[in-house]
Image (cartoon, rainbow, N blue to C red; front, side, top):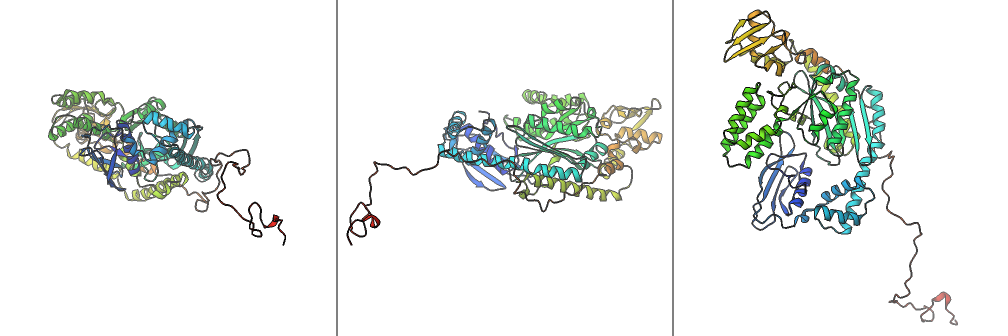
Length: 573
């Protein structure tokens, strides 16, 4: 069963505690064991196997940094045997509802008896007819709720959005088994196209109160390295198809701004179909994988080996150096250092597609960003009480983006100089390292710089053989030494994406409020009727059973005889 490895180990992240419990339930069913809760709170959960003396135990809690639910400790050994077929004891109502919804999306006419049979055949969980019937009722109500709002209230919201914020995009899609909503505000699209570097981060934003749908996000970074939201997508499931649809809508929205797609770089975890979806929609773009996720997978592989924690840490450091290496030689040196300890670990790294995560072989430009976790900034953007409504959730995003744009427009009014504060800080660091370097002039544009090594700087092409200038967008210390020698300005050779002018362009747009949001009745306006109980065409009638034995004998109140009553009594007065 494909749930066998749904729980991977320490460091694995989940959207919220509900998501963790749901995945743990699936894992126990697949593995065939039962567990009980030692702690079961909203911020921490500890479970252990119910087997007598079994050592299997797991502890997970909420991360204070990312607000995701993370496995902190796990003893993945069953001394009780671990596969006693008792997994069905943990088949929760939430799990059953989720499974039934998945099946109803494929075949809405499935009857409870059919579901009982399929669930037993696929998962080995034996349920009664009444359990499945109740689960089917709950599943139908939840599916109807999402469907009703998506196509009942969102068209109203879309019309108001187009009236107040022309140029924005809100697309709805419904098929037999999928429903999707794409949203991108004009101010965000304009700001990204005119003021942000061509780098997009793709990820899923965890929702705390619901697992009914997922929130996918495409975000950029502004000239000061601040997170810049571009577009969002509400889907029922994160998959290859949902990512392809999201990216297609994003491409269409950016086409109105004449965006050059061939220079784009995407950064994601490469999972849930993203590794195939990005090149499918943006053929000429570059796709980098999140180093944080690859590093966690590598640590998981190392925990399976016999090495001490000190040796594991050393291999992780070599892995980090391989990712940040600017040349093939540096990359190979780091891999060989790992290979000297473990050939299997080195082979695992090579098999993880370093062309997507190592600067030495990656052909795109990440501007020194290695992780897609910047989307963690969106974790608290949507109040929990508004997650139950798509309209309120999307409008919460609109309000938050409007607030951030206004705050950043005000903050940059006091900035001075060509570069934004964070980029100027990085520039000062490169300048401080250039004082001890020696510069030899080869031509008007080509220079030889000597320090710990010999490097060639080409001012005409904005290049240095150390490759730091090309990778980061800021001149490296070798280029700074050349500028000092010939009297050129450092700021003339910085990428435009780091300058205050670009920052102003990113936040030049405004997001206007949606009228009538406070007065609109979101409990009304359903366009799709709710599921109705099955009824018979024949009128209900009282059935008479001639074989039924009468237990109560009624007597006439006048003559005290049985067989009639006072109104039909023939006794004389």
